[in-house]
Amino acid sequence: MALEYDGEIRGVLRDHARLPVDVDSLDGGADLFAAGMSSHASVSVMLALEDTFDVEFPDAMLKRSVFESISAIDAAVSELRAAA
Amino acid sequence: MSVAVGADRTFVDQIRRIADEVAGVHADGVDHDARFPQEAVDALREARALSAFIPAELGGGGVSTWALARACYELGRRCSSTAMIFAMHQIQVATIVRHLDAPWFEAYLRRVAAEQRLIASITSEIGTGGDMGRSIAPVTPDGDGFALEKQAPTVSYGAHADDLFTTARRSPQSEQVDQALVLHHADQTELEPTGTWDTIGMRGTCSPGFTVRTHFAFEQILTAPFATVMNETHVPVSHILWSHVWLGIATEAFERGRAFVRAAARRNPGAPVPAAHSLSRVMSELTMMRAEVDSALADFLAFDHDPERPDLATLTSVLRFNNLKLAASEQAPRVCMGVLEVIGIAAYKNDSPYGVGRHLRDALSARLMVANERIHSVDAGLLMIAKEV
Image 1 (cartoon, rainbow over the protein chains, first blue to last red):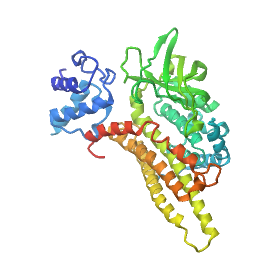
Image 2 (cartoon, chains in turn orange, red):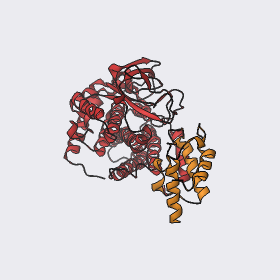
Image 3 (cartoon, one colour):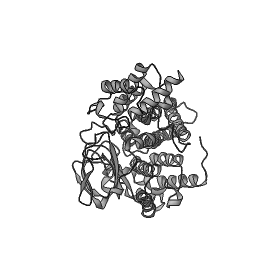
Image 4 (cartoon, rainbow over the protein chains, first blue to last red):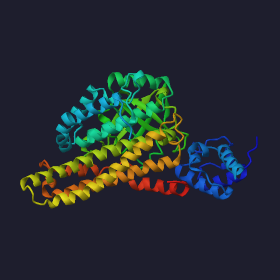
């Protein structure tokens, strides 16, 4: 199933995740941390996602599993936008 | 604060006795000679304290995190090196107990309990700039098993440990942040010293650098990713146990100050004791430290209540337990310095009953073991995204 925000999320990752590989070479379920995203870079990614989607991740969602893949991020963003 | 149940209370009493009767007796000699506190570690083995945190059904003592923390405090009051070795060992045990997911590690915990094996950790690595969240040396397939060669700038009590718990890049193809934890036995490991351990404090931890070469089986790699272990166990449990060690050191320095002013008061009954006034200010510093250490432990116990640990997995939890480390590591030497100034020259002398030189020197290690500047830079990022701090 296509992800709702796939393009925007890849854009954020391209600008902020500092991955050693091309974001487009990763599939939706690929582990971003295993692909080389550091904890430090993940914080920049979270901030950029909040800006891009005009959402705020509550503290309970600020954890590794929520940001570990494009599909996990997509699910989190979808949940927050649905609640908005 | 939680009320200790029977097993916890008995355990803490036992550790206090070892602290008073063994660790404290040898503390000056351990510090002077920068030697491993063998007597105290033997006594801890004798009391089966090395398996205290292992569940009873695996042969351990089944005590709580609260009891481990109190034990670190009691040992810290008498011998910082013994206390820090005990704390570091328990962090390794807690990692395995809390992320247990394979028969090999279950059998291993039974061995730790039966043989009272001491576990050291090798997390630091030359070239990572002190970032524990990255590894350079990879786990490499080698014959019928796997091999690892790592350049470690400090390995506490590595030469005295029965087993070593080492972080590594998961495979030669893995990124540096994709880490695994390997538990290897001393008889599978070659430790080639690359330096000495002649330091200003924590001299008995015997923590020189080594080139580590080991060969091990696939089962000896912990399945849980190190990043999960870091969040849910390593950061909170390390910072809680370390800060209890430092609270013990600061409390003992403070008690020496109190003994000094009491002696002064006894010499001239009724006369004012100016030093007591200064010591009262130091007490405020100690009280703040104790409040932070106690509340962090209470928070951890509350966060840890849910077996799924959703609260410990959040980044705000990292922020919370990083703050504990920063506060306690800066406050402990401040208390020792305060006491030094209250007592004066009698505290500056190494052979005085009021000496606090060892305490101050040991406490200075606190802000360096995981450098506070590194923790501040992690917190700086987390502050941007946390909603409530």
